[in-house]
Every structure is written in structure tokens, then in C-alpha cells.
Length: 89
Picture 1 (cartoon, one colour):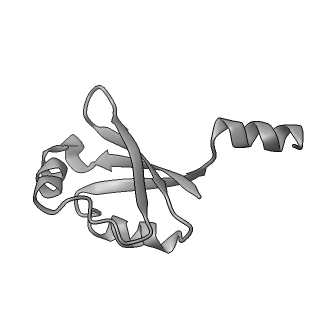
Picture 2: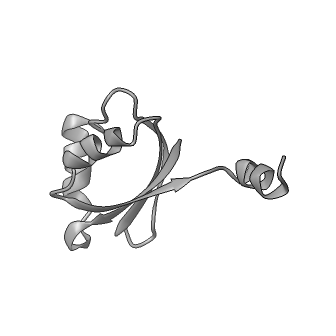
Picture 3: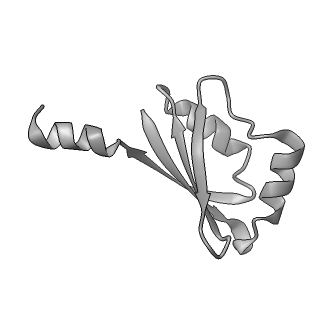
């Protein structure tokens, strides 16, 4: 399943997140796959697309970052999958 993870940097400061990432990497557990990410223009939010069959792995990953980031986790699907569902295909 796909998840859009919206990260809101605490105090609007991405610096601590980038420093930790440089030191420790993504720290994602086995079975949680990072696909891609985007940052908004004012560097206050990150949008990450992740994939896993086990939602609990996202919570494990979040635990490594929750002191620096507030998270929103949204299950998503591709546009192609949405079209198939909407058209009953």
C-alpha cells in the first residue's frame, strides 16, 4: 500500500532533520520502502511517498523522527488505480 507522509518540521526548521539524515540515514525498518519526496518552496514541509504492506512499520520509522517532525500519514493510490475503481474495472 502507498502512503503520502507529510512532514511538518518543528519550529519550521528543516536543518536538524537534514543533519540527522546525513548522520544516520532514513532509519526505515525492513519492509518500509521510500519511493520519492518533495519539499515545499519555503522549506517547512516534506511530502514523502512510502510503500509498505505493514502500516505499523511507518509508526516505527516515525518514532526515529518525531522529536523533530510532526507527521500526517495518508493512505493513497495511483491515479490509474483510482480510475479503475471509479469505472468499476
